[in-house]
Image (cartoon, rainbow, N blue to C red; front, side, top):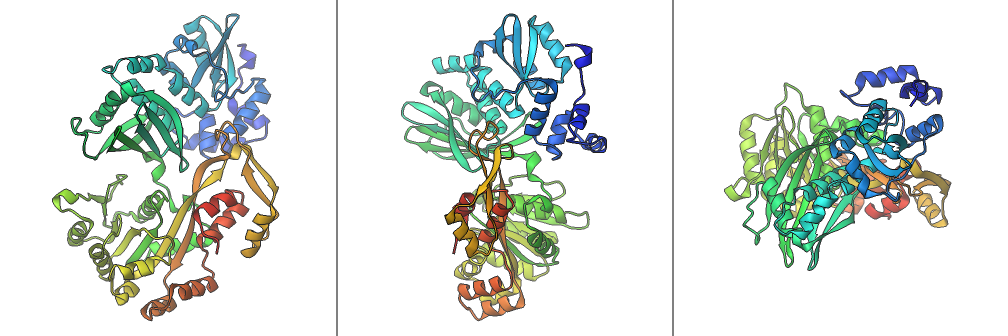
Length: 539
């Protein structure tokens, strides 16, 4: 490559008028050590990866490829060591007439190109591909031979297989990995954006070795195959600290394993990053600054309650405040916060832990979940004695939390005196930015929007592309409803009026329900009506 053609990314993006010199300097001042400019720009929201690839494609005359559907010669991986491919985010895809075509996320990395030419003795022709595409290709094709050997030898180690599976899960941003044994094989599935999808099928011969490997890493009993077990693995993948929660379950075809992936770099969000609309953000911010009271978060498992709880606690985490939590399990370890792990085997339940916490002079208490009357009563009495208490409850809506507490046998006057507010939330898939397009609304959609007095003629949707694997969605966001308990609601609760009456009152007061927030986010082009209707009820 000639010296004249060696251009800098910043200059190319400035020429394309995508970014200014001031913005580049701002990004450089905030970027992580050794992070490339392109990655930092995308991470900080100045450009999308698609915009970056399009500019490089036009300005440098380098073609872009989709490895997801590219016919790859998997023998070429022998030319480039795996650590070199991962470190430089590149992947060999074709060799013809002494020219090695290499998919690169950064075709301006001239040092990497020079190193490849020395390493392979071929002329290197870079083509563009997304970072995720390249990392997935590396996970899929490297160590493939070793994995096949594992399949053919039931006693061979399954280290490479498990490494590949976990690496792929992290690259796909999966929340869970499922290893499902069947009669003839082992199915590997990933839950991405809330949806489970199959990835690969492994030979039955590798099953025992693979599950033993998981158990060794999670410090579980390898010889115990008849009882469920839970464990934890910590590892660093692509420079990120990843926490893995492992659960094994005996089935008729062997032990099923589910590995939950907790990316420690993504959990600590400010409350301004939690997808609240302006009104809800203001109300929730004021609510969590109350000196005492009970604040509940409701929603099913996997609705993002923990992320919101930790966001609120992070906001309140100051040197002059004593915050103690009792959780099952402690999902993320928070700096400066005292966290207690529930252990029912030795009698350390939520209720027992909560009693002990009260003797530790706390200002703020977080109870992972209110599951029974005893825990509910202690949490409520704690909030009445000058503590701010956060907890979660499994109900379908914010208002449903009130009868749920009554059904637990809690006296209405205690609920009235303690409850400050209830936040219900759900997660919906976000439209993929790289293939987002608009279209006119259908008659059915128009009917729904008219019902909620929303003036809209166009909606957005994802066409399906390489970035989103053809689904049209990439990533998730929360929709919320926040019930603020005022004096009128307290009187209604004491009078034990129906929940429908309370619902009518709060709607008159302008409370936004899940469906309202969801439809508003459809109007803003973040998600689709189909997604909102999946998690929220149209009344």
